[in-house]
Length: 473
Image 1: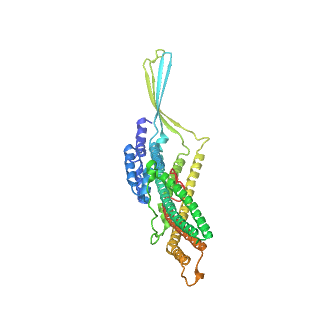
Image 2: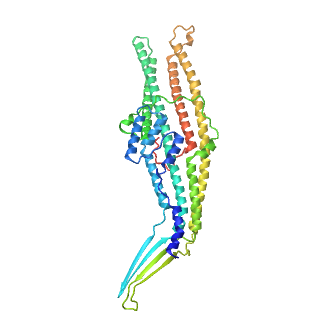
Image 3: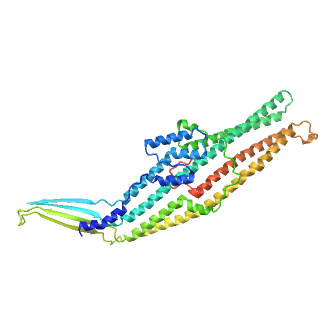
């Protein structure tokens, strides 16, 4: 077999198998998917110019109170763990291109010398089996690269979801601080008034003690929620990737109002199956392993096949009848004989690996349907609860508080038995504060449930796979 004939056979294989680096390293598809699901722009910062543009964009966004969408965009530009995930995508593309390249030929040179003899041999060796299987191996590597691209999308969507949750929790916590601080100021004013009445001889010592205890309770509660708010804000700050003076970013004073009606949640299981990025990744795994299994089966008995072109030159030897140099050429074929290792173990491993991926894909599909159902139920339930607080419970508590204040402060009631003591007034104030605090929590829980529903339909409620993003608490 001549070297020219071998080159004629493998040239189409080489042309079909080789891949090249994409202009954007796969980020174009990642940015498109992220834009569709979040409305934000995913950018890989890989140059000084890109870093400068990202910095300018972040500075512009921080001039105004951060909305939820603006916070996500800041995180996509400033979170370095996310940028590291995009570097992983670049590494995956490099692996893909590397796997699609044919193996380099090897050149062997040998020189022999003796009495009156000078002999050298040149050998060019190529792994024929690697060349023949190159297109199939390139397709397998392409599936792995597709998996990596969707992995970058999943990591980005997971970060966006974490940022939205932290944004909601931070605003809700700061709103709780302001509400309880206002209630504490009101209690302080009442305490001062009762203290003045006591100094004038018209107050009650029990009332003074009760209001003082109530004020102390509120002070402790304010300290607790203020610490919780600082923790939530630091979690958001870490996710945004901010430091220095940027940590003083502004947020809205309150969460968005409840919608008039909750969004329709129909065909959620179908949406989850069609949109979940982790399912797309699992499908690429199954396809890649199926191709790998077929390749293993096809090469079970032939794991090493090498072709070598030989050139041998022997100089003139005056000790023999040969007075001229001799040049010889030829070829050699090296084949591994499957006596002990017949390839059965490799094929069995490939088959089990493939079936493991199939079963994991089926399990992910079951989990995705379940997560979508419970996320939808939580979304509707938290909406009903928040709506009930807003439209029913808080108005009733307001009426109770008004009547309680009227009966406590009125001195002209026809029936003195209708008057209430200060103990009941304080009890009502405690109940009103608890109801308002619970209403704020209900609004927060609805917003979090809405975020979780989108997560259940796009990338899952579990940890990102792979996850390179710090999620916080």
